[in-house]
Image (cartoon, rainbow, N blue to C red; front, side):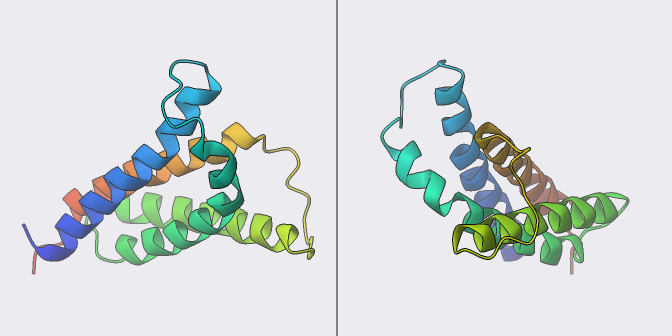
Length: 125
């Protein structure tokens, strides 16, 4: 396994955990990390955008059909993160009020899963 694969797998697991902990708090399954959720929601849109860009870059190094799935989903999530970030600083291009806060946590969880898969599906050079 190469370094880029290991980095994508570890980063995917970290992003997955960052998405799952608030989801578990939202559904009252656990109270672990409940203090971080308030602070975390401010940074969430920026994290979504940055991880979306990383997911797009990783999609170019993948093999098989996952390349297109990862690239398209990464682009959509990156766009949602950028639009949410812009609306937080006062530039509202599109209203994203139809996405509840738990939707952003679900998107982060999906990004983590896709990054993990991308780490396993990358080309071996």
